Structure formats: structure tokens, C-alpha cells
Length: 169
Image 1: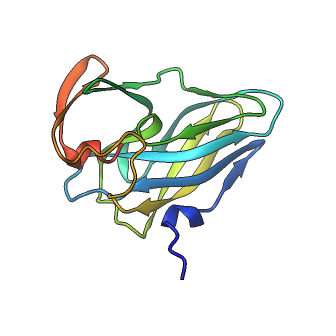
Image 2: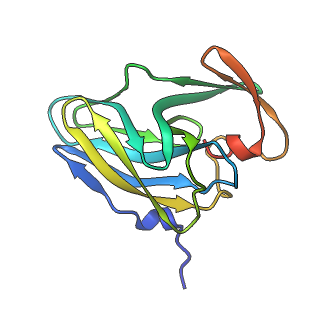
């Protein structure tokens, strides 16, 4: 029997010339206030489009974020102008990089379930996607952060983050 991660079974969603492939998020521990959404956004058209935002019924706030590590400091910032999806290209939303940030969660995200979110594009409009909720543990593109606390700079503010929040980005 082959073991395939749940995200491998997620459905693709299309709006105009854009395809959102493998939309997923990680499960959250009880009381978590944030989660992140990941996907591959492909633009099969001749014109660039822009991911400008979104919404989710399970969160009060949805923003597009970019995360990067500078030594032991995690810097995260909102992309207020959105994210360009180049004509004939693709952008990957992934752990440790670009992602949808869901804040002020209204409920815990449970592995094996799905969560619905809306992605909003400048030209193509809005598309609802069903994101697979995958287990908290797993491979992180930027390495594991569950052993120690890290300092996270988010915009102009700095906050201490432990595994319960950092692991979801």
C-alpha cells in the first residue's frame, strides 16, 4: 500500500486562465490564532494577473504574506500590493516563503478535513477553493522550528513565536 500525503489528493480550481493547484493548510493546535495557506497558482494566459487578497470563513483576517529567514530572525511582511502571477508562469505559496496568512482564527483546523477560502485576483476575480487540512508535523521547507523559540519580525512589530504559531506558516 502506498502512503500518499493528503495534499496529493486535493482538487485543482480554475478561474479564467488561472489554476490553483494543491491548495492546503496545516492543522492547528487548540487555541492557535494563525494559520497559513499554500498552493501553486498557474497563469495559462498571455497577461499577468495579481493575487490581491482573499477571505476565509474560519478566520477574521486574510492577507498575502512573504516570510524569509535572516540568521535566526524570521521576518514576515504583508504584500499590500498583492502578488503578481506572471503570464505563462506560476507562483508557489509554500512554507517558509509566500503564503496566505489567516489570522484571528474562529476555529481549530483539524487534519483530514477541508477548509474553504476565497482567493481574489485583480483580473480573474474571486474563486473559492477547498484546502485540504494536513497534519501539523511534516516537512518544512525552511526546517523545523519546534525545538526553540525564534524571534519573528512582522511588519514593524517584533514578537516571540513558539511552535504553536510558527509551525503553521
